[in-house]
Length: 77
Image (cartoon, rainbow, N blue to C red; front, side):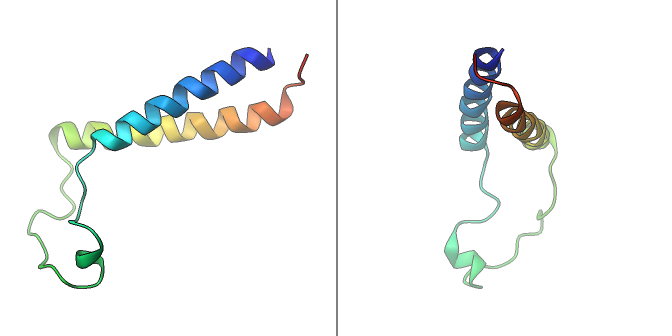
């Protein structure tokens, strides 16, 4: 059972990494975080593909966390 959970954990980890890398950044980096850039009018809009990737990231993150907990509970055999 441990190896099934571990395999799922690795697959979800790879998927989370791929989905995060596919997303567009919300700001252009550290310059915006320190006040170097102007505020965009479309801040907070998550329509289309961006919204779907955001929701998928959240769901995969929750699944990843549950699998991480399961790895601690399931005995290695």
